[in-house]
Image (cartoon, rainbow, N blue to C red; front, side, top):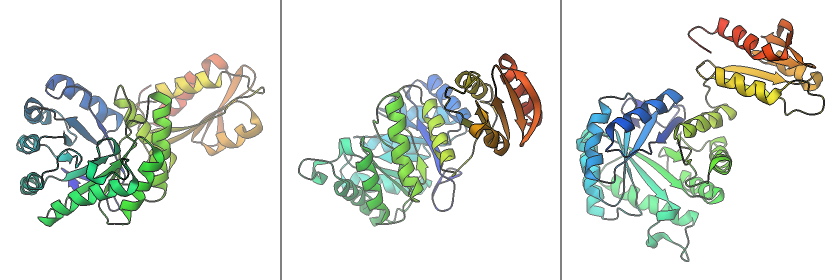
Length: 347
């Protein structure tokens, strides 16, 4: 299916998406955040539509941004209809709080007229009581909720459907998606919702999304983290890169350090990563502290540093290009070698 010109599902690459945390009615702030997300590699942006002012803001936002905009709808079907009128490229409906079959069918009819797809977004935290098992959210109940709304949409001939089944728990999310994948071939949107702050949220998201993607399940992902949503996009790309599904910018092989390390590996790696943040070409960069594994890793990488005591050697494409560079000059020399070969990049 397509969201504007963006294809999701089938043999298409896994799409990275995120969600703004501005008030959508604050048009200027929302536009700024969407532009930041796009610069970080976000390919689809969802905005909250809690009121009519937010729905109406979509028309102005779309004039200023290039990525497709999905409208996140809860409780009020009228907001979905309004978002369609103002140009939303996609709708997210929650079967946990929009339960009127007639309203869902009307939304489907209007969306079909405009060629706008609908995501059936099931969350364990807002699962309708009809689908709870023993008062709890279960994989089976989440799948039932999704299939209930899918049947309403498909019953009126609507086929442009994406489905998500999310929970704060990795195991619940994974099992629900595995069950749904056996029921049909709808494109699946993956994520762990409310996974926790910072490290906890990143780890849960990487594990849950990674398990499913490695099994061939999933077509688009959103990493849900509190704070600046640009971080969500950065983590999403690292998940895809780690699984070999997509490439964007440098990937780093970094020595974990031990008593043999003679240079500041963490500091050098962090500074190199920061200064190469605008490079979009796929590169493998090794920052290694000693010859035990380091010699092979820098030879395997596109570029690398092999450390000694207070100095390091710069490699490019498996060959030494700058021997015995002083530690304090290593980052500058490495960046210089890389950028000399990467047209259009800047430190």
